[in-house]
Image 1 (cartoon, rainbow, N blue to C red):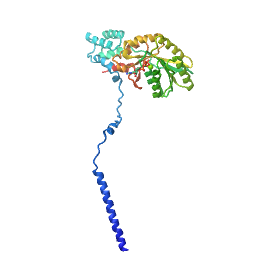
Image 2: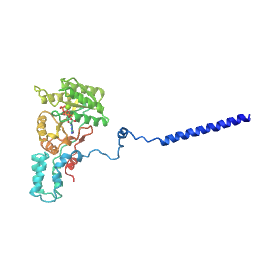
Image 3: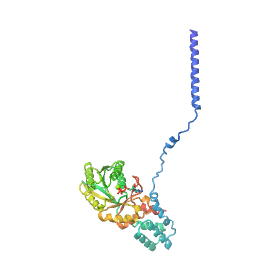
Image 4: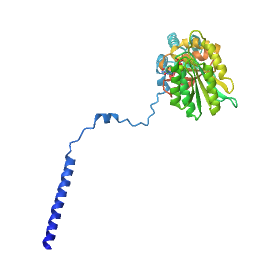
Length: 348
Ligand SMILES: Nc1nc2c(ncn2[C@@H]2O[C@H](COP(=O)(O)OP(=O)(O)OP(=O)(O)O)[C@@H](O)[C@H]2O)c(=O)[nH]1
Ligand SMILES: [Mg+2]
């Protein structure tokens, strides 16, 4: 009996020793394992944590090229009467930024008479601001029982479809249901492009085959919007036609359809490309003669030094600029604010 107990005790002691040695060996093995370098791929894949700073470009940054042109005016010192040299600088800068001859002449005449009591840049700022007087409100409601329509017109490439996408996003974000009408049937890719915006923004879309009658697309979109109780229809149009058809005649037809029950056109936006400078003005005159334009969308202000064209458009066409495009992204559209705009050119 005793012998058996002793044998069991010895075996237990030996067993415990083995376990302890094994544990030690394992912990030693862990401690002494060579450190493996972090694979570079993993390290590079770590996305930076969002910072608390908002890095959305400011209007000053977005209008950097136009602001650059005004640098010479901003750096003119002194106050009171302007020297001939200073007046020359103001004239050159205003013309280079495409403010236009008539506004430039008016600003110079007033500077000669009034001088610049608080400095040259503040005086130019005040005189430019006096060019903006239009009503910039945007109508998004129609009469009771009608579906409001925003119609977008302009020559090809100015940014109609992109602007529709950006505005659709705004409307959807405000909780409104949007139907896009792919009224540019000149090429199939136009409807594809609009469909991408519909998908991206959560808007509904009505489209037809290439070459279909744009009026019937708009008509169908209105039917869909009325049946579904949608809040607004944004109608795209072609910027060009084949040679034997007249773009402006076709636009008038589309407009008539869009303005017939259940539709009511509450805004017709003429989209103009700021990078074309004074050419945008002559384009605009043609459209204004054919369509009842209620507001201008001036795109691509981010990519031009000719930002002064906004002033020329408002003064010479007497149509308010309601939105400006400052980039290709969905959020790169701003309601036009003359004070913020002029400040971004002339603020110190
Ligand atoms: N930088 C910049 N690019 C813009 C802006 N708005 C539009 N674009 C670009 O301009 C190009 C033409 O835009 P679209 O929206 O296709 O122009 P469109 O008037 O519909 O042209 P068509 O369908 O050919 O009549 C695209 O590459 C857009 O991304 C803007 O505000 N800034
Ligand atoms: Mg288009």
